[in-house]
Each structure stands twice: as structure tokens, then as C-alpha cells.
Image 1: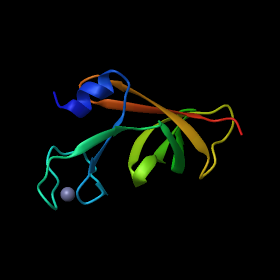
Image 2: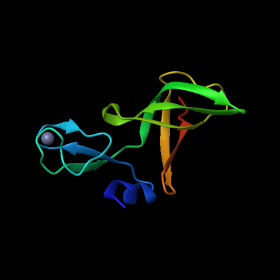
Image 3: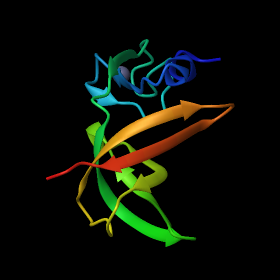
Image 4: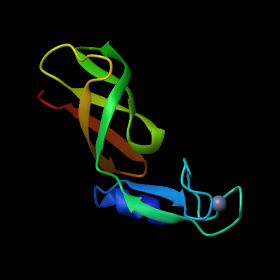
Length: 107
Ligand SMILES: [Zn+2]
């Protein structure tokens, strides 16, 4: 299991970046593909915004952009119809693969 997956198991989404090039590496890699230096990690704030969403059997899901332009797919919990650009809080469960879920933040 990679460091990234191990952290996801604890509910922590780590953002992979290269200190040397100042680039975010997504999907995460041990080695930067530009300068071949070892990459570094920083904890995500677990906040994002809705890029697009759809509804399936009364449940919402969609594409969310978190920090550094990283985009992930997941379920969206909302009591009303979600909106594009709406702020969401991310939680993650890792069970052989990551499952992301997002809760709409109250404005
Ligand atoms: Zn680099």
C-alpha cells in the first residue's frame, strides 16, 4: 500500500507536490516526472467546489475540485439541489479503493 492510500485509510487526503518544481503531482507519485526528485506531501484542507454533478436514483454525485486543481469524483450529500461552484467538505473512506463523499457547506 502506498503512503497516499495508507493516509486515505485514516481519512486524510494528502496532496503530492514537488518542492523543486513547485508542481502538484496528481495522481500522486513517489518521484517527480519533471525533475526526478522525490516528491513531498501536504495535508489537504478537505474543502472543494462542485464542478459538475448529476442525480441518480435520488442521490447526487459529481466532479469536485479540491486544492491545487485536483479533481475527484464522489457522492454529494445535499438537502436541496447542489449548485455549480458550491463549497463542499470532503471525507474519504478507503476500502481497496478510495470512495469520496462531499457534504455541501452551509453558506
Ligand atoms: Zn520536480
